[in-house]
Image (cartoon, rainbow, N blue to C red; front, top):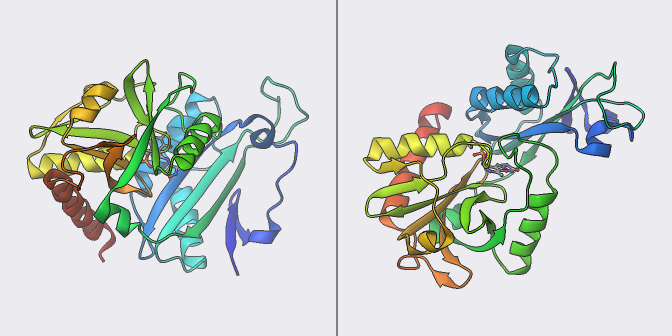
Length: 282
Ligand code: DCS
């Protein structure tokens, strides 16, 4: 039996009914979060929910539940599904209404969450992955975790067709982030990462990783860099909830550093693992 959260009720998956007039379906008018679960413990849940409420506010959607209530419901959902390691997918839309662009007067938001078993991609952490560079054609509010994912979908498809794990996005040659991750480069003991603004999603994993950098004595500079500068970095990593700290060893055929995950990357991964262990008590 698999269970989903539907508004504020935990129900069997098959009981969830999505209306075809849901604005999420018709307009992508909603927001989402992906939250990692390690050994039954939800990681950085509070941070993800803070971003969920922030995204909602930015699209003028009022989430009809308190943060405490959502924390309880999501923990119950994980337990009810007996989830060990995997993730929670959570979304909320502006609700159901005959199709019209402007906000409906009386629609009620529709919230759905489900869990997915998803082991940590340890081989990627160990060996690294390939990436390709793709023009960033998204809108100018990438700070909102919107359900509108056509830009990333097209970029990811290009990466997939090129045998790559991730698409590194750029605007006029300046790297913004990955299709579903943040991108960072390391050179001479300094980690460079795009500053938090409207051009990137403020990644929860990015923030955990920056704290790890601090703990291991790696200097952080929140400066944007070009594709050429990225290629000259000795280490490149992407971070996300599911990708954690994944080394990039090749970008469009160009070998990064030695072609193997570098020393700083290894230290960051080690510190990241320690952070998980401390939080989830594994
Ligand atoms: N940038 C973009 C565009 C993302 O979609 C994501 C996460 C990130 C950065 C990294 O953010 P977190 O560290 O908070 O996960 N994307 C989610 C997704 O769609 N699948 O997994 C994570």
